Image 1 (cartoon, rainbow, N blue to C red):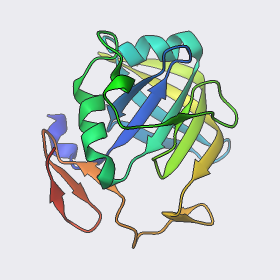
Image 2: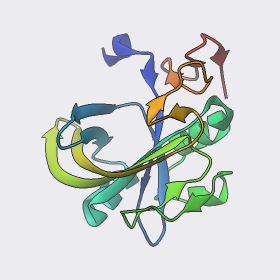
Image 3: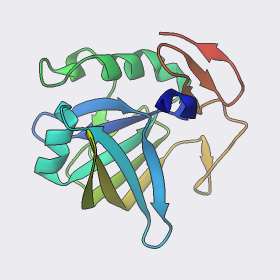
Length: 170
């Protein structure tokens, strides 16, 4: 039934410190301006779920359509069974305010500390207070440049689109 909500914006969630993991997520939502907070819903059985619970921090990275291959791999491989970072063409860099790394190739990295966990059926909604943000040239003065072809949406399944309406498949 949730497929009727698609297309949804696609993000990469970075979790873990000693062996960081990257997961694709569409279920990311803004929650508050003051303090700045967002929520990300992660399935109870996902490897990322355990890493966020253990560390209490995560990074929401904003990929461009040029990272479609990495988005697909991060969303179809389990980091609990193998080290995804060996397969991904992504560079992890030190974050400004959290221990979890950020992704150099992404247009924004939103660093969060978990302030609340809400059990919502087969997922946990991790509420994160945004403690720092870094961004690339797709943002001007902290706001997205909508003429920049970077907004990636999952259209359910193997279909992706951008803010320009172009369609892509991995």
